[in-house]
View 1 (cartoon, rainbow over the protein chains, first blue to last red):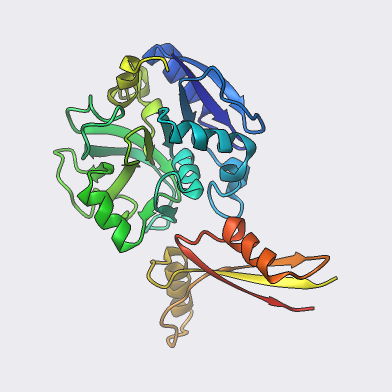
View 2 (spheres, rainbow over the protein chains, first blue to last red):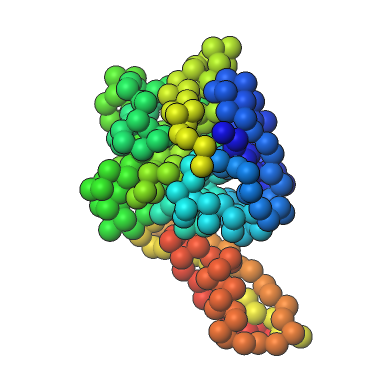
Length: 228
Length: 77
């Protein structure tokens, strides 16, 4: 199995994703420049965090329209595993592959800290191995998840909320919802379950020396996904 | 060469946290009449020709995100 780690000008979690997949999870990975036009030979896609195109216009707006993302759209449509973390989540939302958008944190501040997450969906390839409250790092200024009421209702009703911000014990609270996301949504999944977007960084938590290995619960689930 | 000014604003239903901070700052400067501030952006396009369909397309495809923003535009010169 081999993952494409997409690189945009301004990506800065590309190496985290690459080494996490290859060295910690045991999935081969290769960087793919945003101007490339093919995902031939890849079995999964990681859209990494960072400040693609300097966050100009809107976070992820320009990256969402770059050539490789047309291929990512097709790949996702065909059922291939795709994960977007942080800026990668913003990119997937800007593309409309995932619903909603990410706005400036309710507290206005850039947040760089660990958060606790509860998996709300346990059936997707990304969430099926999550059997406890996860502690993962966040590092974002624009992570407040918003969508129109109907979309939020659908996400909740159809089990498409991947993760919510909770406290250490797995309970929701205003304090735990660090960026003021609607219904404390930290990550969402598409209806088919192959695409996930989340603000926290699983790829920065796959090795004890990094402070947490909880990201493995999300990424290691992939090792069982057959080569397409 | 015609100039088109596009104005992009956050949908009224969404909290504008940056605007809220600016409102607080104005109130601290004793502008007590300030109730709310909302921040948008203007984008000026120099175009070789004005075609409303194409301008709307640019606004919808890239300049604004219809999920969270509204846009309007005017030809200013």
